[in-house]
Structures are given as structure tokens and as C-alpha cells.
Image 1 (tube, rainbow, N blue to C red):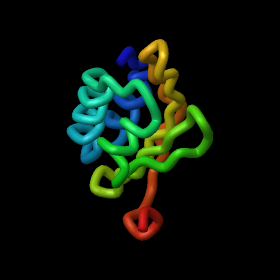
Image 2: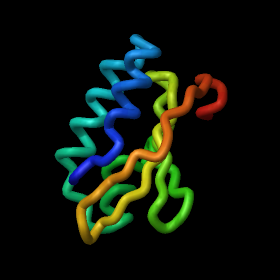
Image 3: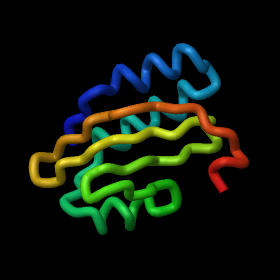
Length: 93
């Protein structure tokens, strides 16, 4: 997939160094993904994925301390990072 807005992941990782390795791993996962439909994304990432709308997804990453929201266009193979926000582990349950 093509990831647009990966700089938001890097910026959050710089501001929150403990999150940096996890966000770099997420960026690599998103770039290597070959999802062609929502059910494929759910199959691979269902434990952390919450579908907000047909094309909007939020990944709750409590071990990293943040949530990453993005829009995905399966046909074009494009992910656009919308936001990276801090979460507490209690919020992710």
C-alpha cells in the first residue's frame, strides 16, 4: 500500500519516544499490506482495528500508547493517515 501522511507517525514518535518503535513497525506493516477488501484487513488486524466507516479505520495500540486513524482506498491501494492520538491502556479495553 502507499501510505500518505506517514510523517504524522514519525512526529508522534519523536514527541513520544516510547511509541517510536511501534509506530515504525506499523508504518512498515501498512506499506507491505496487500489488502483488497475490508474483510482482509479485519482478518489480519481485527484485534486492533475498529471500522469507523466504510473507508475509515482506527487502530488502537495500547502497548504503544496511541491510536492511529486512517482512511483506506482498497482499489487504489492507498492509506491516508488522519490522526495519531494518545490513549490510556484503560481506554483501549
